[in-house]
Amino acid sequence: RLQITDYRLQITDYRLQITDYRLQITDYRLQITDYRLMVISASEVKCVLFTWLFICYKYPIEIMISLNKWLVMY
Image 1 (tube, rainbow, N blue to C red):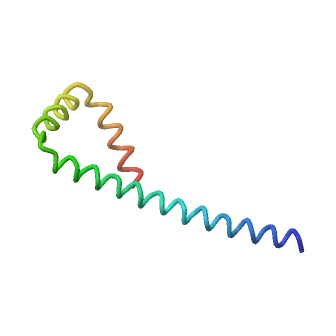
Image 2: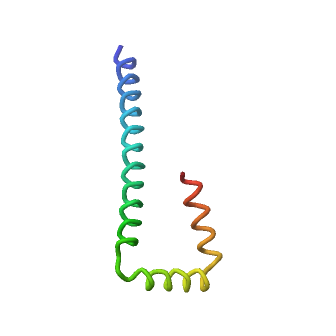
Image 3: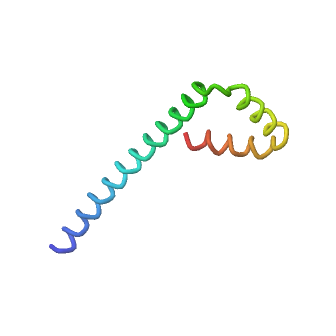
């Protein structure tokens, strides 16, 4: 009987872990949207664009790898 109850507790703990993981994903998405809103509302949008273009020109391969990783996450 003790083994059965321990197994049930493990199942419930696993379900809680899944819900925590989902909450983490939603928090991550909210952070991304907040970051985009900050970039859009920033007054130095041109500066951000110039730095982004410079980074793309300087490190194109690394950016492609990071974008692929980001797309695989979703």
